Length: 324
Image (cartoon, rainbow, N blue to C red; front, side, top):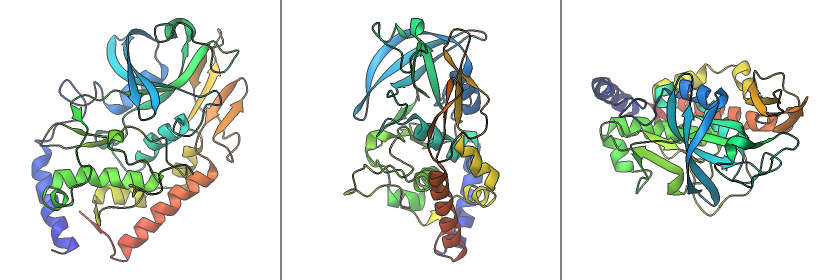
């Protein structure tokens, strides 16, 4: 079957299946709120920590936190990973995790996000005592602990096999979601294929994939080079909607990846999210700005994302890859 014939069949099937496909947010979904709303609440709103459960994020220690927000009231679960003292590092890089969340927005709508909401927070010490009674400030003199809060996904499971070529060829919903996953992993040069880094919805009608650990990406030099990773495309056909949005990416869209988050101290010295200012230094990913912190992708990392984007579009234009 040609690319064009398969695209026509899959488009018709996807259209018919769309109404039956579960949405990723809501009581029976994977997130309690739509991703943009949840991201804003995790980023900016005050909360209390009602419960803590130690987990394992690959080789890094993480924790599952039960967060209690007020005004308006909301209880959500989140994964917490404390940052290193320099706010960056191998396999513990907040800016790469948030960078992956940002890159997907270049070509995916919120309901199709592959990376769940992830934010940089500096949790005040009095709140953080619930996690670690002996905690010290990450960036003295600011009385808070820096790290990433990621939305905890529900109704998901770890796939036994991440990519099933036979299912990709016959199941349009599976193909759609795996295509989006593979496309993001390719663009950000994701080089950690361990199955625990990926989850899939338990909804058989809508097998949506999620990438929940993206620290080894964007040219991180230390990775298992003996393994094949999803920084290479495993498929020849990709979702047309995502490809067309990649064609429309502008230099301004790419430049915005240079400043992902800025934190500045409040009256008590706690670092809080503020509207980002100009890029203080495109050569580095973690920058001191005023009395606070700014993180983003470096100019070289952004250029590499764009190079991969352009190479992909060229392959499609030359007929070496297809769309559906």
